[in-house]
Image 1 (cartoon, rainbow, N blue to C red):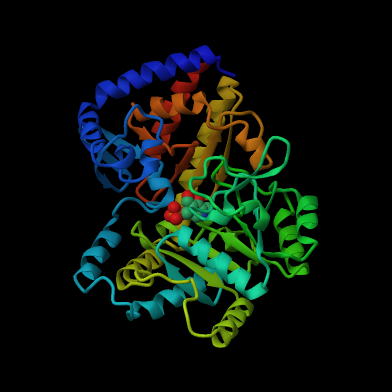
Image 2: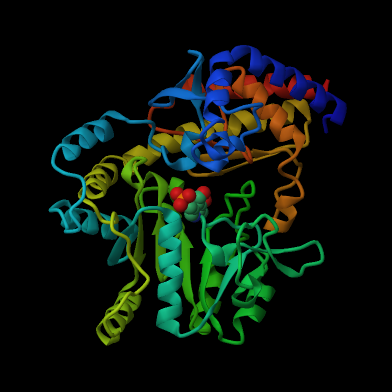
Length: 449
Ligand SMILES: Cc1ncc(COP(=O)(O)O)c(C=O)c1O
């Protein structure tokens, strides 16, 4: 393992280099600080590890150009929002074409019929709804699950992230107690009363938590992807399905990140059988859009519920959801990118990246490892794969991650902040992959010296 002194030295040098390379971004950051809370239009933009935010002038394919004219190969891709690249031609053309026809009417456009059929065909569930973001979709789904089961509790896995969704911000603390996320702002409800949280891959805990029959739904990513990547144990998804079914608990699979697995997401690639699926981020090429899909049985229950519900606000649905522009873009993205051919090509390069990093790790005898979920690759600066969110939390967000991020950024390679995720897009080339591996290896060489 690299010494803390080597990590600190690299971080300090690379931060100085960042400042030297980005004077124009610094000017913009100073100006923006006057009128934006925290200096940025959205808080997370200030949470990258850099001394100030990098201002991006242009993003095309996987190439970013910053305000100082530096270019980067982007392996972050907007943390999945631009999974198929930045404004690829089919998306840019559709945006111009659809934009000229009117953006939103609160009535369905003809594309709605096509998109519904495409979603069903790709992801295997028959009944869909559109929202503006994956956070919105998860909130709506939780509401539906409570409404359909008459139960108020939900269950999530420790270390999960499902968007800005109050119910999911519950954690296990060091003593294994259920607590609200200490970072929450403005929380008034006692979240631990209605949210159960257990460790991923813990079948015994799952059985115990569902046994009382009071949980409306389990909301789960098929692989935890927001705390490094935590893969399911052999048989875990089968147990999850069996136990949810046995206890009348709805199973919601949030594919927002794991749809990197293939044209039908992780669900189809691994034969899962959820009651509800959530898809967000890249589903409309990067404009705000997300969808959730219901199984035949859940959609029948939802239809009956709608019929039986008196007039009034359901608490589900927002004005700009299901708009013509979302439909036009989703149609293009589903037709163009959610195909076997696209994912076959992405997987070839993702495998090259995974193997390249694994070989570099082996050559240096450094205590790291690498995992892959389709087009999504993550290296973690710890020797063993964590089996759950608690284990993962203990080994990420450390100075070593920040030093590596800076090192790569100053050499024209962007990796995802908060952890070390790398996504392959259709525009990524073998040369881009090899450049990332070589640069990461040079970084390792320096760290272990
Ligand atoms: C698994 C998962 N679900 C939902 C979301 C929320 O997406 P958004 O921020 O676009 O609402 C995220 C965001 O990172 C996510 O990782």
